[in-house]
Every structure is written in C-alpha cells, then in structure tokens.
Amino acid sequence: MSSTIENLVINRIIIHEIFKRVESNHPSIPVFGDSLLIMSSKANQALQQRLVEALGNNSHSIEMDINDKRSDGIPNFAKSLYEMGDTEFVTKSRYVAEKLSEAQVSMQIPGGIVIIINGTSGVNKYPCCAIIKAEVHTGFHKKEKNGGISAEYLSDLFLTPQQKLYKIGFFIFKETEIKALVYDHNMTRLETKQAAKYFYESFLGCKIADSSKILTQNFFILTGEFINELDIETEKKLDYQDSLYSYLKNKNDSTLSISEFSEKYLDLEHRDIYNSYMLTATFPAIAIVKELDLIKNKLRRRKISFSSGVTVQRSSGSLKEVLSIIESSESSTTIKISGKIKDQLT
Image (cartoon, rainbow, N blue to C red):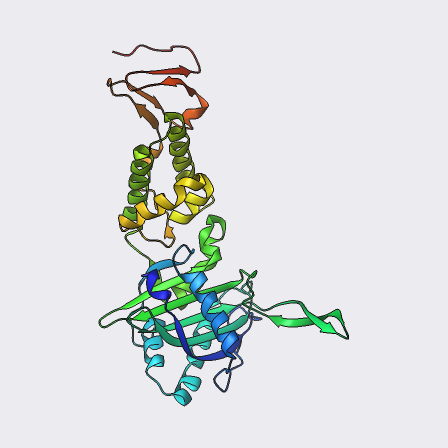
C-alpha cells in the first residue's frame, strides 16, 4: 500500500488547534480555523515530501485494519469530507478536532495543531485524507540583515524535518474499501507503545492488523533463507543469523522493517540485494508490528546443521559466543566449541 503514497498531491488544507486537558472529565475546547490554508508552491511541495517520507516505503508507518466502521467514525467521516465542497469542508472538519480532543483523555497528553488534508495519491489518483497532529515547539530562524546574519525567535514551529513530535492518520479511499496507514514514533518502542494507542485506536478507530504474526514469521523465514543463499564465508553467515535473532528478540522495539534490518546489520554490498529479495517475495516495505507468537519456540534455540547430519544447538544466546569456525571447505568444517563435554545422550 505504501507505494500509493509516492504520487501524493495535496488539494486543500485546514488547520485547527487543540489543547491539553485541564480537567480530567472534560476535553478542552479547540480553536477552529475558519478558512482553507493557502500555501506557496514551495511550502506545499515540502509538506507533500514530509508526508511521503513519513508514510512511504522504508518508513516507520504501519498499515492498520479499520475497527470503527460507523458512519460517524473517523475513517468514514474522512471519506465524506473529501466529497464536500470547500465551505462545508472547512466547517465540518471541526468534528475531527473535537474527536481528537475527546480521545486525549489523559491530562499528560499535550495539545497541538490538527492539520486535515485532502488530495489524491498513487498512479490511479485515489482520493485520500491525511490527519496530522503536530506538537508546537520553539526555535530560531536565520535571517540576513545589513550584510550580516541575525536570528529570529519563532514560537510556533511545527513539522520541521528534525521534529518527531507528530502523528499521522492517512486514509486512501479505493472503490470498495478504505485503507489506513498510521505514523507515530511512539509505536516503534515498547515502552511508549501505549502512548500511541489513544491516537490510532480511540481517535482514528484503527487496530493492529491481524496479519502481524504471519508477517513476523515470514520476515524470520525469508531473511534466514536470504542469508543462507548468500555466497559468503560460513562465519559471516553465522554473524548475520545471530543478528537476525538479536533483531527479533530485542525487547525495546515493537516494530520491524526491511530497511532497518539491512541498515543496522548487513554490509553495504548486501543491502540492496536483500531489499530486492524481500520485496520480490512481496514482503511489505513499510514497518510492521512485531508479533513473535508463531516463532517464539524457534527463537529460544540456535542451531547450525552440517551436511553429514550433525547439528550443534544452543538453548539460548548467540552461537558466536560459544562456537568459532576454524576452517571450512566443501567436504568438512573445523569448529571450536567453548566448554567441555557434559553428557553423551542416547
């Protein structure tokens, strides 16, 4: 689905503002924009590019299933917004800001700017709607003055390239279905995963796709097969396989992706062919939620098998920590294993 983001065209934009709750039982009242935002061609292109970077291939966006299918749920309401004229779009879009303010039930969740965008995406120019919540921050803008350089203090910066404090819900309206992509940096780390839930679940009406377990299993199998098929030294393959296990068992990360694994663990010469291998196998280019249920037993042990039928297995941890390959040829392998023989099982 992410490939349909690449041809994104923005047609109209409205901005509202929401605020942090000051009373636990009552959402704060938003401040509503009263007209479409008019941007320069340069600013429009920059915003389109920011969305493509956040949602497109090799991003940390996640495709989600739509859980709220009511007519006034955000997915269907976003579709109706696209079909409205400009005047109605401006007034009815207030509902989106109100619903987001209601979803922010915790007094710890900050306010921010709500940007609602209509446009088209993909080669087929499907109608689409993006809903962005961006936290406002401060900074300085460089200015040239009298032949020198001065700095201007800005108190309302948002969506800068360096800023990660924004969330995006992106809906594509195809003939008979609505597709949803969600970007939120909080979803990529387990310790902050709950912080993202109010946005994608309570507000957007989306849920983690049921296919995440199968995709995680496919990632494990396909990446392992790719490593085994590489024409490289056996010890290097062992390094790569150890990296695969470490990547999947990392308890801090709640997502995984082709690009992240290749950039973190593969040598430069193997990254492009790995990416092509996975995409040819129709594995998603965007991040997926890591669900280990189907492979947890395989991750509990590491083993290396030889053509003679011999298998060396370790119950947990890296094989490289206890096994080193001294010499390897087509007919034999010399290895050194740490520790002495403990048992000879029959």
